[in-house]
Structure formats: structure tokens, C-alpha cells
Image 1 (cartoon, rainbow over the protein chains, first blue to last red):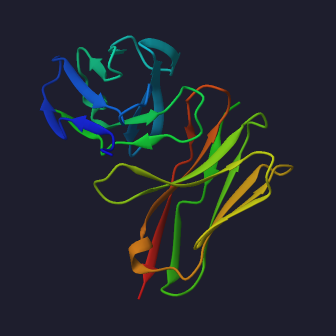
Image 2: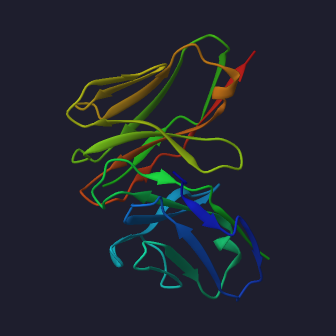
Length: 113
Length: 111
């Protein structure tokens, strides 16, 4: 069974641009969560989607948004990029929203210059 | 509030046991987790424990939970150089999927 797939693995963007990251969960999993990992702030929860609905949102500005499609694939978008948005963005997939086990992808390393 | 604390570094010799500690604040947490992250990689789920359990053993890994003190530990028996990584403790505070992570403990295993 394939794991969680995140694309692209690496991305370099310029300040002010926008970016879209993609996450394909494990087959059959319907819940997707996103996290931002930085050396200073550690791992912080961005949002959680289940059955195309956002169930939970972390404390991030409105420049960060996401969505989930009917096939459970999810995208997150960051608009008007800032240098501080440079981070590893991780996606986690679970069978259900209340499921015990969350499996993470390899992440997308975003660098904003 | 939601907060998870871990010590930042641990160094052990190959073959010794490693014990990584974690404290959390949310007494309503349903599950507590240990994840491993190797350089350049995502998070690998190692094990988890339900909040009404005291201990869980899985091969070389033993998780101990003291709910009264909100203290969680991960013991790795016979630590190998391949165990060198960052270990994250996380709590799941409610029925949703959100996880609250600690800062991570960098485990260094010396031959």
C-alpha cells in the first residue's frame, strides 16, 4: 500500500508569490491534516480536513488556506509569501477524523527568498 | 492550555537503553504518541498509548504513562546507531485529528 505522497518535495519561491502544495493520503484514508515545521516554532498544526470539510484550523493567518477533494487528496495554498513561511510542510493522513493513527508524508520543503 | 515539553538532547552508547521524557498539560488528551524523524524525512509513527493505560510494550520500545503527573516516557532497549534521530512526543487533545507536538528530543547514539 502506498504511503502519503506529498508533491513537490522541494520548492523555491520569491516573497509575494503564492504556492500550492499537494498531499495524496493513503488509499482509503479520508482525513488529512497539515503541519508546518520550522526550527524556531517546531511542529504547528495548520488545518484538518475530512470528507471535503475543514474540521479544525490552527492559529495561522488567512494567507494559509486549504481544501480537500472528493478523492481525499488535499491541497494547501499560501498567498503573498513571506520569508518566515520557509518551512517543511507535512501532511498526515488518517482513516477517519477520529482515528488513532496518523501517518505522515515526507513533506514539502518550501524556501522563500 | 495545550503544551508539550521535552528535553532537547540525549546521548547514549550503543547497546544501552535510552529514555526520552515528555510532559503534557491537557488532562483531556485521549492518546499520546511517539514519532521519529530522521534527517530530511517526514515523521514515522513509532507507537502510541491510550490515556487510560499505564504502559505499552512493542518490541524494543516501552511507553510509560503517569497520568497524574502528565508524564510520558519512551524507553528504547539495546539502542542502535540507526536509532539516532529526533523523537517527538505528541498529544491528541480531543476527538479531532489535531496533534500537539513537543519540541523534539535529538537522540545521539555513539558506537
